[in-house]
Image (tube, rainbow, N blue to C red; front, side, top):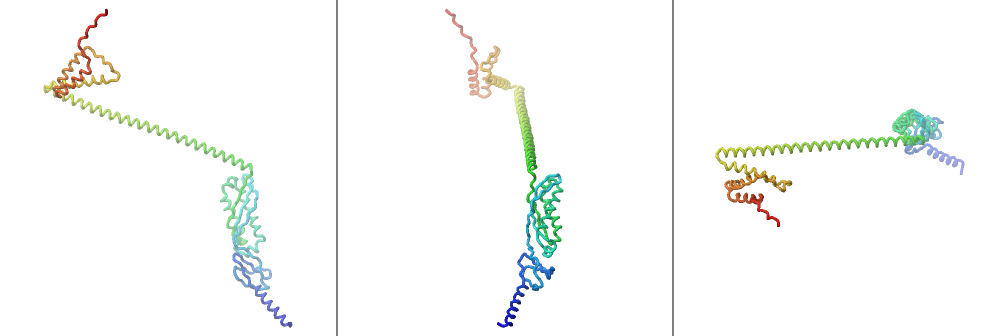
Length: 331
């Protein structure tokens, strides 16, 4: 092989290496910075790119996807001098590869330190109760402050989340007692409220019952008054009819009226449960003798059958009135 052949082969190899050195393929999700003699010149986007070999070189390969970093635990003193242990996470994304590469030395460490500092500032301005109950507000304030601070570095902080807030053990125990006392208080209040409602409902029920009973008594009294009124009207009408009959010379109507009243009164006395023995005065015998006249009146008024029934009733209910036989003397 001559010297010319060796030169030609070396030249071809140099050309091939130059071509490979000038062609750069950037993967999706990354941006590469290009430096010429150590100075940033441009940024390569994902895909096939051409650079000038031996003059340009790839500076930084920057991940443009959203990334997450853990914020380590640290102790924070709240506004009311309570010490709590706090940690969290931060999500950020690079939107300018050149600034992220050349504006800050250690990007991840810078974000961690900046976030921890702002956690102490934000939570140190709040009471312990606010720290424990306003976590969303803390996250929002941290995001606003940290995002504004990292913007010159070509970054965008999307979220900052506080993972755990751990108070001291003695404070946790005190909080547990407070929570228990609060729940007992609420239970007592609810029980008293239930008893109060129960008493009110029972009183309302008794009131409604008394009202209904009074209405029932009023309705019954009204109906009784109506019944007495109807009876009085019927009695007045019957008396008027008897008076008219007497005025027209019908004595039988008067006798029938008196006999009917007498029989009804005697029947009420006989039906009384406390009147098993009826004591009659001597004058009553004369009255009983008038029952025969009553029978004649009934016979004249209703016929022979009614008179027979009246006579049978008299025999069954009135004791005999004849003379008592003498008792023989003892020997």
